[in-house]
Image 1 (cartoon, one colour):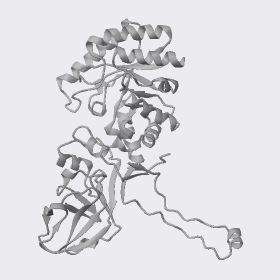
Image 2 (cartoon, helix red, strand yellow; image 1 turned 135 degrees about the vertical axis):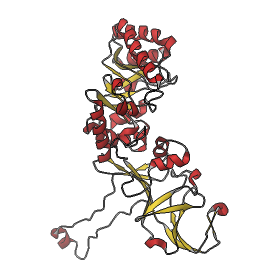
Image 3 (cartoon, one colour; image 1 turned 90 degrees about the horizontal axis):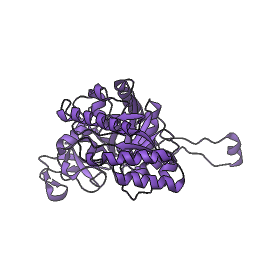
Image 4 (cartoon, rainbow, N blue to C red; image 1 turned 90 degrees about the vertical axis):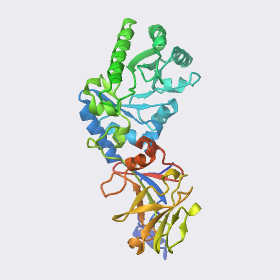
Length: 407
């Protein structure tokens, strides 16, 4: 996704001295045209959501997860807004994501937790990035990186407590602990934390949640017996942060809820931060019986007016939504008609055109306050989750910001 700072409409002013020097030259105010397709991120909503999650966390610290470029909302602006609102740490998946935060001047603790064993850990170690380790091979690679740069690496153990994905497998945990204890004794590493990830957090009382909690506690006990005392233990994702106070430990680690999308039924006061919108490129008449878009899957049942929106599947509007979505244009919902194309889609305005003009703004999804669709509506139609919807916005869509300073 292309990114720009919140587009500003401004006028240049010229001093009287400049006017006298440049006789006959007129300074004109020029408005920067709005993008054809735009994902507007409300940083005030990010801050609002972090405050709600902080309240749920009570005395536990809060790590804001900003992986995948802040769930496609912009990792750096989101991270800064979250930290200002009370988050104390940041979480990402990769070393490159963590280093991007450091290059942006963010010095808060950052944890990166998924790596290949041949990753170059040296830059992360030098930048004070906390590295998640999930196997004895990871431990060896981090220790080698620490030796190479002569700096102690900060590490956190990710324990597989039942998700059977990333994390130290039960049969390798003892070796990881032995290796880390040796490395810590020699000064190569400092153990900062131990954490795990839930498999059934959206099913509030699933037995696996309690089992994972018990396994994490057991792993912490094993670590302590090796002389490894973690500073922080964490397990709660967004769902658990909002619904399971018994899983707080020392820190909670919400992701999707920071962006205002609830992982469980109910909004909990969260405000969706992304609004996806496009400008009307063309308004035209279509006669009864005429087909619209490829394959003429939609044929006008009456004389009507349609609007062309320059936004297609290359930009994040799934082709599978063809004929299955609406946009907000003015005060009305307008149905998408015909196939979603690579660069464009058509909506039906009705016989009188509904007062829609070229250049008007169509909202594909937003927070719902003005009656517009939401990301959850797309997810329901696609039989997926809203995570995929917001992270799927791409291509020529320009990201902009309101409600805060994105720099």
